Length: 305
Image (tube, rainbow, N blue to C red; front, side):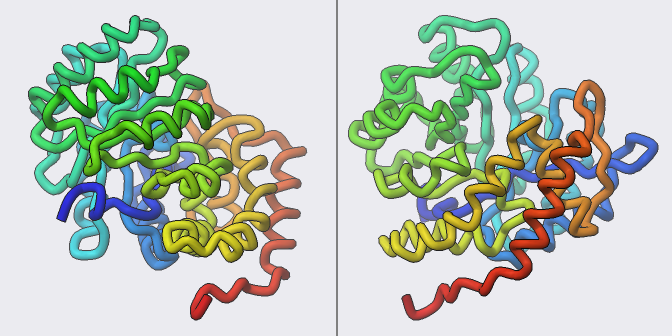
């Protein structure tokens, strides 16, 4: 089975729960993993941006990777996030992190340095040459400060072995459609924008790596599956109920929004590492109001549609 088939559907970019001492709360991470798997997601992505990776030590990252493997084993595949702006350092990570049970690596393009398109190409080429697992590109210019053009994505897809797909979070629908039109058949293209996932799958994307699936796993993964089956009436019905939730998740910061939702559901404690801070009281009220309304909504029937 190709990676594109293995990871078709909803991947969830897992949070990293913390306790009041600021250390990793593995018990709560286990609860979140169980919650999203039981909610129907197809795979897990650990150590993405939603996992607060810029403020985790390498020791903590290795501990989280191993724990995620153990909790997910024989249940769903695991993708490991290894991204950054120091190519040499990432090569060292690829050679030393425990990646034996990962099905792929997700790597965000370099941030802050703002390399040229040729620099981005050479960065990913260097990573792909040493990675023990297929590499999924991650284009997220809102965080990195530099868009990876469709031309660069397609060049990597066609010229570099071990580049298997892309998580596209540019928000540029024209760019997304160009990639979908011209990429190799087995190249996986997934959405990195929860709020745009429905129209992007209508254009041909294979699913989404989602933040929202942490806290709304069943409804969100049902929406994704409906899209992939071509049932866009059902997908719209499910997505309409999530639109306000998407807005609340990202109104101040990710993962402050998703951690607030998970804390309200009793799955984690609401702690982040500086410079991130919890949501303001005003937005926390929106979280609680939205959850109360959501629990009163009549469930959308997703079978036999």
